[in-house]
Length: 136
Image (cartoon, rainbow, N blue to C red):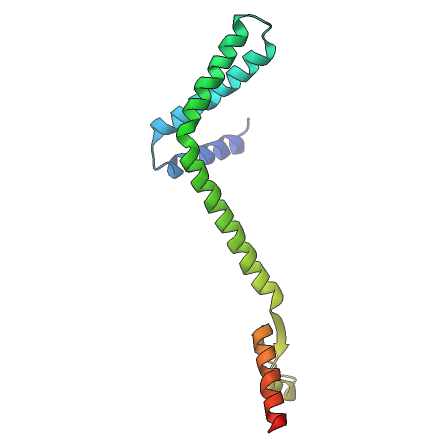
């Protein structure tokens, strides 16, 4: 392991502790639960029809029960990630549908062009106003 890997792991661990509100006890309980699940899974897969399989199943059950404490946090994290994702797509979608058009008075002076953002509503409104002028 090089220094960048260790620093990356330290940053990730720090971010997890920060997300937990600085509760290191909860973080250690999470690590214990994950460790029990990994141990139980490996023990259950490798064991034959003996006591090793029962120990593996017991470790899986205890690890699962310890992880139940994390369900509200994980649901909140999932909701936050979905909100961030859909917010980002709305921002990007708004930027993609807007088109860059030049102002009519700027077209008269090609050396000093000014650009503005015009979306679909503005272009429809301009067409409506032009039709109203033509009808009157």
